Length: 223
Image 1 (cartoon, helix red, strand yellow):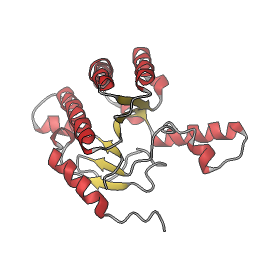
Image 2: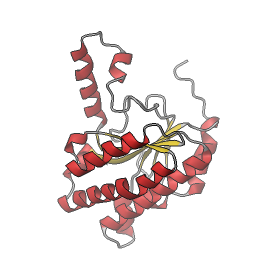
Image 3: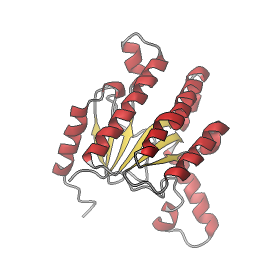
């Protein structure tokens, strides 16, 4: 048994660049290349959904030139690589505060989601301008406004992830052992895997080891 949905916190791009004497931008570029590799590994393993934590709401506070580079990198991904994923029958989903993204990226996201909505090989979700607390506040506000009673079900349907399964496992690279505002509602029963390697160095051997360990864990879900 392997996890059918995996959340990934791609941490360590900047530290990787610093340790290699390279610009921060190169760390992010290498991180993007690693994302493409991991999608390929997941497809080969038969995993149904990947949710990548690409850019948090807090990341807007980084240096302007770094933020601008990340937006350009994301635009390139939407135009090129994610377009290739579309041809490979992958479904693309983006979650987060879309209204904060540049208008051209918002348009690319809408178009790609529409074009891939019926694809079935794998779902690749990218959390960009995402904050878990913000997601919960927005879902609560919308659920309350409906006036139909406040339950877990009515609340969950207003989450940005309402069309995604909760992650069976969450992987964080870079050595830190926290979720950093990533999927706080959805991760209550997720198995957590913390890897010391920086994201650009994350290896297939480490990925396969996680898939091997996952079924060995007892997932009682409170029972």
